[in-house]
Amino acid sequence: MQLNQTHDPDRRSWVDSANHPGTDFPLQNLPLGVYATRDNAAPRIGVAIGDCVLDLAAARDRGLLDVDDATAHAIREPRLNALMALGQAASSRLRRAVFELLSTRNPTPALAEECLLPVSDARMQLPAFVGDFTDFYTSIHHASRAARALRPGGELAPNFRHLPIAYHGRASSLVVSGTDCVRPSGQTGPDAAGPVYRPCAALDFEAEVACFVGPGNALGVPISLDDAASHVFGLCLVNDWSARDMQRWEALPLGPFLAKSFMTSVSPWVVTLEALAPFRTAPPPRAADEPAISPALTSAGHAADGAIRIQLQVSLSTAAMRRQGRAAEVIARPGFADQYWTLFQMLTHHASNGCNLRPGDLISSGTVSGADVVDSGCLLERTTNGTLPLRLENGESRGYLEDGDELALRGRCEREGYAGIGFGVCAGAVVPRAGGRQP
Image (tube, rainbow, N blue to C red):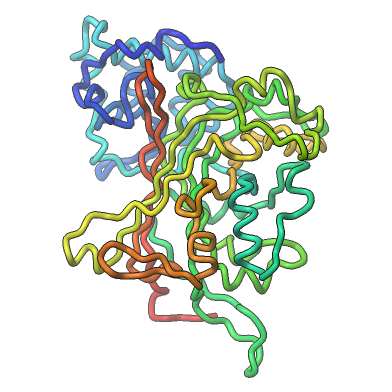
């Protein structure tokens, strides 16, 4: 995807907060999301700019957005699916129109200002109706450490270096950032008293990056690697909450089920692939002794810029920290560009058997972890399955998450010569099940 005027770092917005250093949402980002307000529960599509949200339908009604009829109809929908289905040409035209509207070069900003509201007044929703959710397993650092942590002597699965591994997740339990995570219950292994459902004692997070599918493909028609980017609408952050004690007992032979399906948090703002163009980079090189990549999963174009530089940050706030007036503690900073398989390879592999992907489907990377254990994207790795607890600055320790813990995932893209952009936050707090009710 080529750079254009919307990536110009010297352009500024008349929305002052969009020009503040370190903002996630400068003029060069313009992520899309869905929100409601206290006074109007009807979902609306908006664009984040600084600490404000632009109501796209309202801007169109005032004649401020020059977009075609199909796009005008799509931005009035309660979710982003219709816009996703139109493809990148339509979303790119919308991006340029919004960019010019919010730019200081707009001669009549007062009209557009009527279409803004503070983001603090927006009640964010899931950005799309997700028909299908697929969670991959693409960090070699995570896969290696997790295998050893879950089962002594565990090794990296032999197929990991040959293809992107995934499982079909549960779309119905996808929730927007800010939703509490109710501690799940389930069976965790043989019990002398017989099978018992008990509260999870090894609740974990997984820091992930996901993409929303754009137009998608017809059943039976695969997607080539060089065409994969045209089917990626945009990216978001994901926390795939995981019950490790339940996972160990149930995962063999068919993979995760109840250990994953109870809840997955999604950040509300979708950063378009076009906004991420300055941050594309070459995927990590493979060692000479590693298996050759299938021709279907490699190309010259992908080798040049198939990865995306996103720096993730995971923060933990405990109940004790908040009582002490302490800020949340950063516990990991993994980089997304280091994944063994890229989002484009995941999408291509997903459709390689003819599986049809639809607008709004969510494809997640699996846990993003760095080479150093301190940059593990989950506690399973960081604490070696709870046996080496993480020591926090206030003297507390965590093998796994406890009730009252608040977990926040952030992502940011930086490159010299370009405006830095971010994803906002994907957050959730762990709470006990009401009344301690068990199955």
